[in-house]
Amino acid sequence: MLPSDEIGTPRGPARIDTDLPVGKAAALLVLGHGAGGSVDAPDLLAVRDAAVAAGLAVVRVTQPYRVAGRRAPAPAGHLDEAWTAVLDGLRDRLPDVPTLLVGGRSSGARVACRTARAVGAAGVVALAFPLHPPGRPERSRAAELATGLPTLVVNGDRDPFGVPEPGPAVQVVTRPGETHDMRRDPAGTAAVVRDWLRAQGWAAR
Image 1 (cartoon, rainbow, N blue to C red):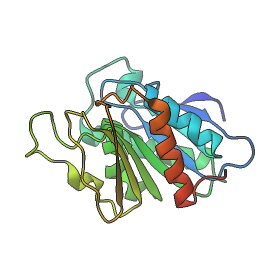
Image 2: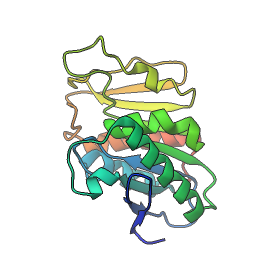
Image 3: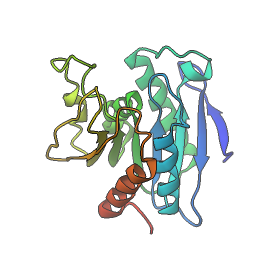
């Protein structure tokens, strides 16, 4: 499997960037980007590094609208459709990885939550989950987190998009001093994710 490649989707080609651990992967973690951002966001890169070091394979997915050079996000249904097609393609490319985990930051976290059951994920990692538009707490997206799957949410305590409440399967870790971009301490954010992966039994080391 090439480190960087494309997978066709009904919404155009998506780009995948793959990082593999030394030895057999304990799980596959697939990460999506924020609405106007990229898969090179500091928190995504830090989580990638920590997860690979813990024995997971990590794939970062660039949505078709970003591959096409557009910054304005596609409608939610288009994002979900493309993401699901990418996950189908990854099953064929990485058939021996026993456990699928999905996640992302901001919009990418929402996509991962909405589709987690449909793609057969065992758990979700949601970074900077945008609970509501800034200043509009009545427009809560908390229902998207209710997947019934083990879910880790890592948000900054200064995030104008809000911080979700924990739930039966949802663990919420609030990072002090972080805003929505989660740029202050990416390594600390990644350590939270790594420790959760270990606690769930999805890390090899």
